[in-house]
Image 1 (cartoon, one colour):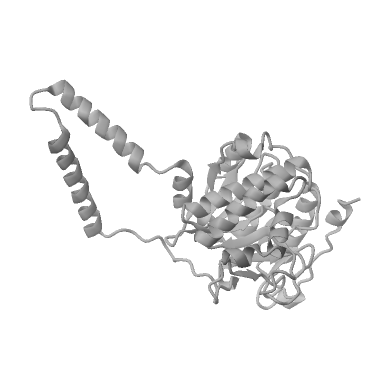
Image 2 (image 1 turned 90 degrees about the vertical axis):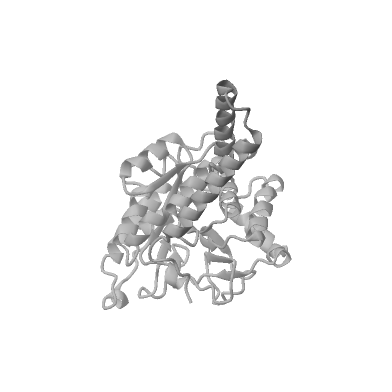
Length: 348
């Protein structure tokens, strides 16, 4: 059974709203009676209400991330997250291809309202907002990761690439602590079909994650090389602890990207120790350039993994979208994925 998402947001009933308003009035009046100055002292009375307003705002106002998450999430607090920088957001680049895939995919246009595009720099944020019809959030600097300026293209396994990946893990841990479950997707993942019905949590798994080369055994996370470019994670204490441990591991993992560290953690028993239940996603449905889908009638996403440069990713993903334009129930068997020639050349 796939992950279900509500058809539309839920709203509080009028009765609940009135009850909440009554409680608020009662608290304000009660506090005033108990703590306000004597009648007739207008200056002190005004000071009392100023203090109340400041304290109320501090206690009730959600942080910026919470506001952004709430604006994108379904009623069950599930959303889709991706991260971009200035280079990813350039016109006719990965951001445009990602949005195009959502608009053209089977059952995916309805998902756009629930995608939160997280910009790592101001130019990416401005480009995101210029698109219209999408939700954008500007991620603030994080001194703990020493991220610095990551607006330019970060080549695979460069120092900037590794720092950007760790900044991403810090963000995702914060999202879990806010109580939100999510699909995380790289921008170089094309969404050809709605993946939610194909995400099987029949055994209550906490983490559903893609792989570079699937060995046919979805519960064999130790035997499958996990890929962090596409995964679903449920918000709970187990997954929050996993993300905390994962992010902390960067200190002793110099020169390693976050994906390699997670694979190292699984081999050392972190999933078992933390009680995190994991299922590996079949490349027949969640495919990539490392291993093309064997079944065009089932494929939901295509990831430009096993590819080094952004220029190569854009070229070969465009070819994928062209091939997928004929993807439907009758023609799926005839679809042949194009050779990923530019990505193959990106390593030379």
